[in-house]
Structure formats: C-alpha cells, structure tokens
Amino acid sequence: MALVKRELRPNSELTPFRTWGPLSIFDEVNRLFEETMGDFGRTSVPSTYVAPVDLYETDEALVLEMAVPGMGPDEIDISLEGNKLTIRGESKPVEDQGVRRYYLQEIPHGTFVRSFTLPVEINADEVKAEFKNGLLRLLMPKVETARAKRIPISVGE
Image (tube, rainbow, N blue to C red):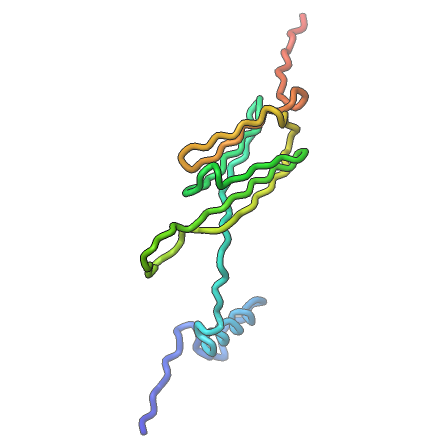
C-alpha cells in the first residue's frame, strides 16, 4: 500500500497567516463546495432569448430598432396600448431530419416578450414597422405637443 500525497490548489493552502476580509468566508464556502461536489452540484439553467434593442428619439419621432436574426416578419407580433409597446416573437430551431451532435450551441431559440413604456406620447395611427436583414425598425411619430420646437431669440436694442 502506497500513500499518495494530494496536491492542493495554489490558493487553497491552509496557513494561519492568510488574510481574511469581510467576504472571504463566502470564498471559503465556495472553495469547499467545489472541492467536495466538483461539477456534480452545478446545474445549467437554459437561457432565454432577449432580443437586443435600441430606442432613441429624434425631433419628430421615437425609433425602436430590434435585432431579430433568423426570424421573419410573420414570427413577430407588435402591440401598442396607450404608452406601452409590446413585441413578441419566436425563434424556431432549424428543422433538420438528420442527427446533430453539437460541439457548441449558442444560437438562442424560443419565444421572447419585450415591453417598453414609451417616454413620450406618440401618434399610434402613424406608426410604421419595417423589417430588413433581421432588423425590425419601428418609426413612431410623436404627437404635435411632444415634438421639439425651436424658439427664436430676439436681440434687444
């Protein structure tokens, strides 16, 4: 019978001179958990797709641009209730009859819902939605009272 010396990780040496901070106890608990459980205790939570958005304002309108790669206009639903804009969509996986053995799978699939409270009042009857190259663009004209107005400055004599 032979004794085998177990190697400790470089940062896990026990020493009476190790410095302790207010959060170091959490580091110790994490270290002990990892040493005891390894990968067994880790669970992978499936991520949900969150379509990235740019929402900006011009003098005349609010503009929303949403990246929805791999989707078509028929897979996206847009609704507007008062000043609440909601966009729903579904990214479906590629239907392939063959067997796939993934080495890496990062393309998100599934449904998403994004809701926004619009910062200014818009004219709902004039909202236009465009879709091109995986980019959804909503042009939402502001009502006349919400538009920026230029005020001329008069010079006193």
